[in-house]
Image (cartoon, rainbow, N blue to C red; front, side, top):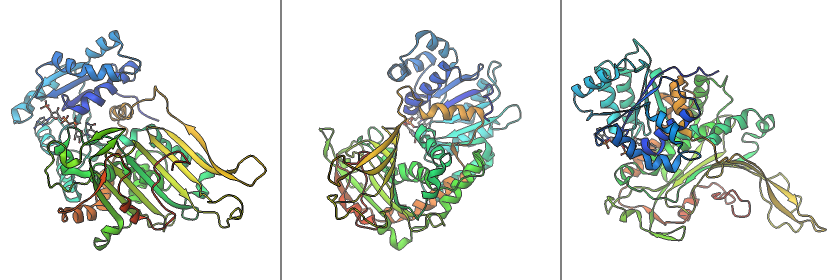
Length: 494
Ligand SMILES: NC(=O)c1ccc[n+]([C@@H]2O[C@H](COP(=O)([O-])OP(=O)(O)OC[C@H]3O[C@@H](n4cnc5c(N)ncnc54)[C@H](OP(=O)(O)O)[C@@H]3O)[C@@H](O)[C@H]2O)c1
């Protein structure tokens, strides 16, 4: 059972930034409209570039109007604004933090404080240190929680350094490492689907599953985030975090309970079971590429190297694919293929589970030319769906077959954004959907050999035209000829 959220002060560092504008404030507004926020909550935005509360609210309006469910309700928004406060700070000197402390000590504010770091990752450590130095992370008078956005470090070593730094100022129970993928309805449904439906369990293993694909493709490029993206690349940006999280949910053993620690223990165990990629075998386990110019949704788009702010010799990958093996009783021998890319043909996130062929192909001599294996597809975005593909007989006198899909669609126009549930979890002290330090460390361990290898080869990278599904050369990761990338939820498109 969840604890109801106690009153709290919700402090957003980086309140003038993109994430605060496009996600956090809107999620808080929706929670307010749904009467899910604690009554005495105060939301404090911190920023450098905006002068005061009025200017801050004005800067939020465009996104709020565009994204508020059912339109922005004027009277509810007015009372929501009473909960909003803005504190201009440069967050540089110890005095800045003393002033912040004094500001937060005003009587009307709750002593329970959540600090949301919607900041460049390079500031996570200095801001934590400064908050700690003025005593704002001490839990003497109320709880103190810190929400950290991804990325947590940029490789294994830096994530360990950051963790060690955090430990000087906070207990693990105070840290909420957010991965908004885990807040998505369909991602949570993976657990329900697996552990509330007995019929799947006998099939969920190496005896019946041929391979698993987990993919996330985007049609957008890097937008205005060139600085961040060129330092980061697709492997760090998507695979180390979101896709490995999905893999752990798909492949983990049933936990002792659905309590946060039991669940996280199983995820860590699974990540630890993944065979390390040997230094000398990176090219048979990993593939990277970068988009050139091309057509996306019938619009000409430029190449990665022509994007503003990208160095002309950049070998940063905008496409990354990985083959992993989970070395345990359930999964030994089943490859897991992970793939992500920008400027791809379609925007889609999905898990595609391909079952083995039947032991005997009874219908080979019939008019059925190709016998298809069963697929189970979990669509995460844009279609939130669960789909099971089966081969059936086409009506008629001939023995012809076709593949049909049984569909459970969850899409609902009014469905909640992942951040709504996650922000509420922070206020309620529920860690279930947040990453524990060992989980982050294990994920970095998996991708680290690839990062090192790619980091040492900066003079050449394969390319793919924008608007495509990536280079065919990535097919070399597959272990059998019958295996290839599954791009669509539709059986006839694949
Ligand atoms: N945007 C997303 O959808 C998204 C998704 C997943 C994760 N994230 C993560 O969320 C974090 C924030 O992302 P964002 O897209 O909102 O970035 P952003 O638009 O660049 O905003 C960054 C914020 O940090 C503040 N800031 C920057 N440098 C600062 C400094 N030296 N001292 C004090 N404040 C500083 C800025 O304040 P001023 O403008 O007032 O100077 C701004 O409010 C990042 O860690 C990112 O990786 C973002």
